[in-house]
Length: 47
Image (cartoon, rainbow, N blue to C red; front, side, top):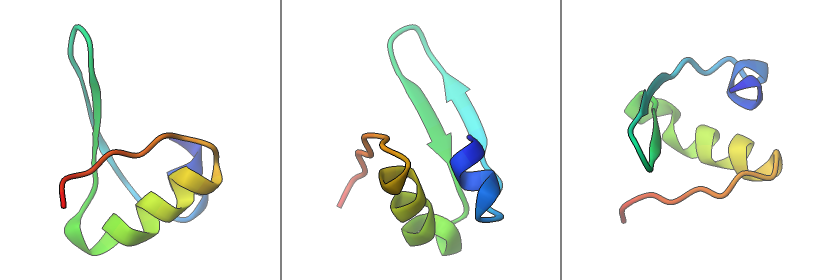
């Protein structure tokens, strides 16, 4: 995602038939969520 690239976060993307997953390093999780939400994406993550 360009939103993550803009803040210097690398990702690993996995796409299935009905769901897409974006995996990021544990240390980048909070920054990733913030960047994606600010870019208008819906972010779901386990608590």
